[in-house]
Image 1 (cartoon, each protein chain N blue to C red):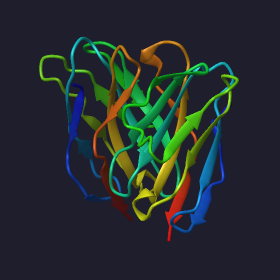
Image 2: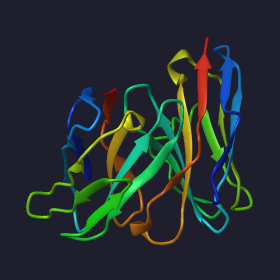
Image 3: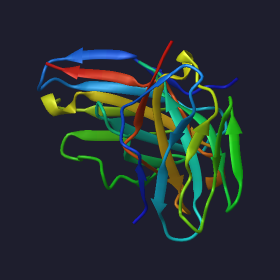
Image 4: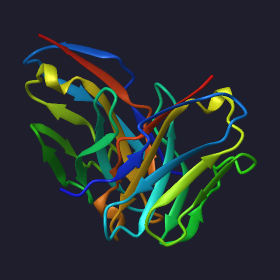
Length: 111
Length: 114
């Protein structure tokens, strides 16, 4: 079945540091890939998505590229801010529309 | 911007009591999902509706959980009786047609069972 494996946290960074969160997946067919973000006490928000190989999703300075050859969708941001402190979830959706989530990576950015 | 609405935001109940959560999806979203998120984990799908029909409830503990979406719009998730292990965030999401478009989540209901 479909599954997502993402980098274990927690990750602690200083402001303006470079952030990478690794995500790899297993799926049949050609899934769509997503990154969701969850701020403290809130529900999940869609951060970015990619629907086919080599697509790059981007939003709020975050980027992720759909790499079919390595079955990966790593999240990156060049210069993080304190406001980026949150839990980040990698997810995929196959033909049945269900989302399969990774376990989440907690990111803390210190001023 | 349209949002998924959920209520209540927080609920504290004693074990063996009944509890219910409500969700109103984004208008026009035919697919509705209920997830359970245990602290420190990713969301786990409990039930998926397409309009008023259940598409997938394979992970729903049917001895105590029930879900309905009678008119194909808003939905209710019920737990009876609640157990200590049910303490979690319950998230509702909806999606437009097309699996590539993703799901849009509500703010969730945080349930604490004492």
